[in-house]
Amino acid sequence: MRKLSAIFGFMLLSAFFFPACEVENCPPNALAFAHFSFVDQYGRAVAYTDTLTVIGQIDSGDSTINDTLINRDTEVSELTLPLSYGDQTRFILSYNGRSRDVITVSHRNIPYFMNLDCGTMMFYEVTGAESTTRMLDSLVITNPNIDNNEKENFKIYFTIAADAE
Image (cartoon, rainbow, N blue to C red; front, side, top):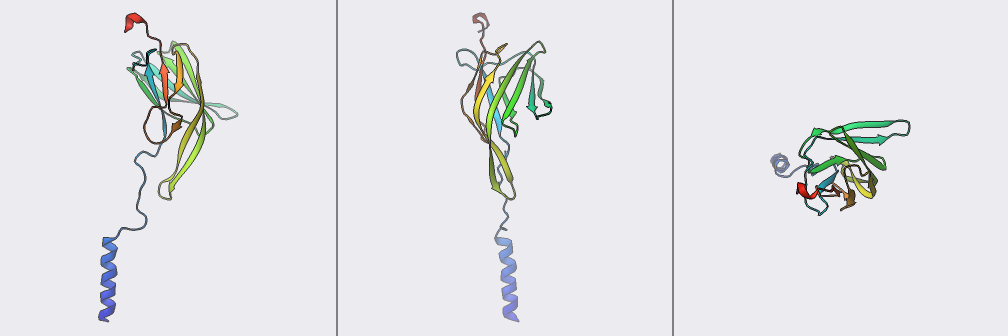
């Protein structure tokens, strides 16, 4: 009987000292966002000082779904935007309601399974990007791999007049 209580006591103590198998090792940021930086024609960081609204647009076959991602923000120098689970995501940049540019990002979705507790994260590989040029000058892919590490993926170039510098 003394042996049995010693073994039971050892098992009870070991349960407190050793963690369970289900230790949660999920990353703190399990979402992947595309990061856009605003730069001038010389590659210097700039901010859009007027009101900017960004609308995400997804074609679902039968209809188009619009969702306001950023509503009337000012002093914008970068954007952090989600991508869709489809193979293409469209963003409409509305400049103070007067003019609009459309950015279309084509991407390959890469499901990433971490473990049972964390589930699956979606990473992306950008396969192409294009934009209209009403207010912005051009769009350049700087890093095609979009994951949960926060890094620049695109540069949005604006042409700034010489007297505005």
